[in-house]
Image (cartoon, rainbow, N blue to C red; front, side, top):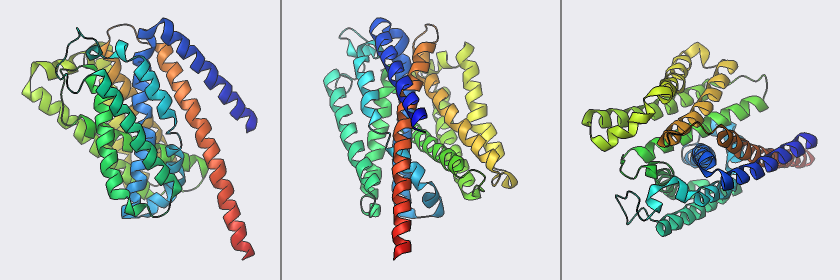
Length: 348
């Protein structure tokens, strides 16, 4: 275990050094990919936080079963500082509104100083809520205010990170779609972690039904945005979908529809399959992969250059490897704490 962990740390640090070097010499091949992967990754800890706060209000066996995995997702939050630092470093290469002569539709909101201030605010709110969630105790007292703060900050963060790549595009549902995707992603990862940890155990149909509901919610919000924009046929909003629905990215869009909604819905809606461990874990893994691909689809068509394979793979290794190390350390500590509590109970 220690050998695998050391190897993961070495590979992650080496890849981080390569990504930093690539960003310094080939910014257009690294920063867009880093932003896309960062937008996908940040949904995991924040979605995990939202699910824990919801469970504190509603209760339910699903939260008891997924609690350790959800807390494992929250412990990756410190990587958010690294992720957002990379975005801030490449902001001038990513966002046209960072340039005085660039296209600008809202100079009050889209300016460097205000954007940096919002990032600091996001980190403070997320860090404080994350610490409260990991500390435990009576989360029900802070859950209402925490969920409101989380919804506002994550919604605006999604607008700042990806929607503002085209300052002319506007959608009132953009933050809601990102929030729904983040919660679905966090839930799916938690199901994967719990299913992998309890190998051979039966998966509760309740988890499959909840994952189905979250999938339908995300699909409904995303489709309504598309339908309203396409029906209105406004030049700016419709043009945003243009490069994302043509050529290779158009085929990716079809794949996202089929594999992010149609196939998971078809599998999870069948009652006999909801208790099949292999089916539920396969769907969970598919949803995680599709949420990552969807963020690539959101970000990368903004640039018409070749697909930044090095940047995407490097970013996935850095954020994925760092997350794996933090989660493994947390689960090890949580397992040791649980064992100690069982031993103390046996002595009593």
